Length: 444
Image (cartoon, rainbow, N blue to C red; front, side, top):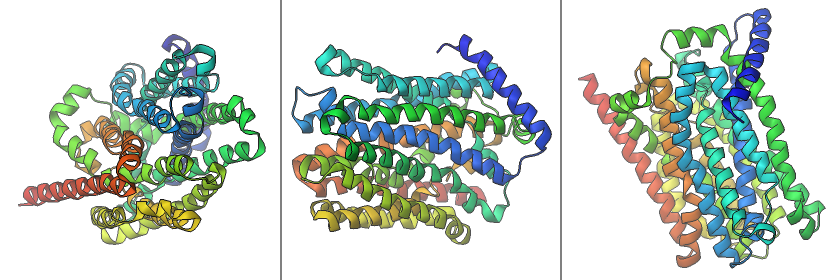
């Protein structure tokens, strides 16, 4: 969809949002939190729908001419394209934001995300169009990545600026709830279709329905987010330069060090993110006789533990400090990496222990990973700097994780994937050390 067609729609939605807020007055932090959860859940639902299909669908549909392992590695390589494209999307949509406003930017980005996602639902397989199927999948995946770069709305920053100092940890975890919620819904949908359909019917048409659902959820999330973007509080913060999009080049030149450190600070949780979501599904699907639907149920149960752990991270962080919690959880993830991946060869009990413990660790660390260094940005560059930091953190910490973990494990055993996870934990500890050292120097 072009900008010319999306803009009128955006203006219409913005007008609806303004009228709605004209009757509701100011929006409380709790209302902002609801909008943040809706927005993040829609994004993560899109993410997990594609991730699950990368394991159970695309290797057979798009790469049937190679063995299952190679096909999955090819699928994971395309999976990574969205993370490479995401920073490009941020650069493009920051310019749209400055020129036309946040409502226009969000509308175009979410329609692009919805369009590319639903386009995947119509993807012909290799048997119909040959290698063009893989090329189309790559194009759609890049489109998803560019769109995700434009979905940064600053609502998490708005939330952080409107809560009491002593409850920053509690409200910091709220945006992260979207990850387990999105995983639960996506896994449940795929498990339902796998169990309800024959293998042939699922591969022919059943897998396509979750992508249609993703588009519908995006439409709902769009209006929910526009309603908040157009609130008086958000507009006032925008005009006071607290949440104003700044030129990317200026932001990188001025805040480059903070962006780099901020991108590496959450690597432990971002690496673990894929080690307990995408990678184990691929390992179980390829190297065991387990039914993928059964493992998706294990993921759903484990995600519930992760959800509770994210909630618990809020009061814990408010008591001990966010950076302290990130450091302790990174050390715990490092210890987890030394033995836990091998549990995936331990049958149903081993898989369940790995997933539940992994999700608990993920919840505690991931719950406070967003914006751990964002407070170091000056007001002028907070909005754009936080967006770029998030993009780079996902690129370095998560984008290649499924591919690398599966590649290493298939050749050197599951213990090697633990080495990859360990590297992420060490990067987090180093980044936090640099942040604390910089704060000590500034305090002198």
